[in-house]
Length: 203
Image (tube, rainbow, N blue to C red):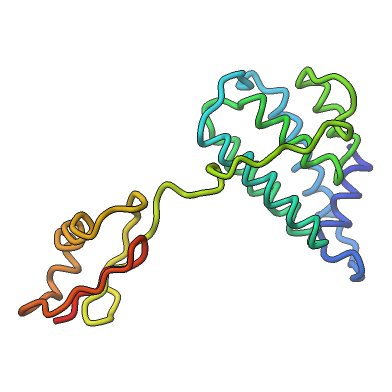
């Protein structure tokens, strides 16, 4: 794991062509990240059952890291892996299928550990020989959106709501918002509605 931690550190500290200042604490941080990754694979929470939350994390990781590698943004690819791990460990169970994706994503950056993880997950052959996961588009899309409520163009509320609600549903929610309703004084002359984004009361 030591060699993988050094490799990860050199990549995470910035673009390949940039000089990097040696920081032992950062190396230890990369090692802790890899250790956490490995412990997750070995956890008794690993399950054959899948969940939408886990699949969403997995496919977004696969898609984001692939795009970062294509753009040679290797340090941001590692940042995405760290964000993935922070969210993934909060799940009730760890789907094996998602951990397999994560091992494949990790392989170019920490090949030794990724191979060991691949074996622990019960996979045959080498992780680098396995086809890269195909992204399922629906897991890249959000089920909710943040609506902004305005009165005469001024922000009076912001709320997370299911995607693709109709105008009347959004209007009802906005009118029941205490901070919005107290600023609606007089007749509403016009409503400006932008689906999945905004509702503005013009008084």
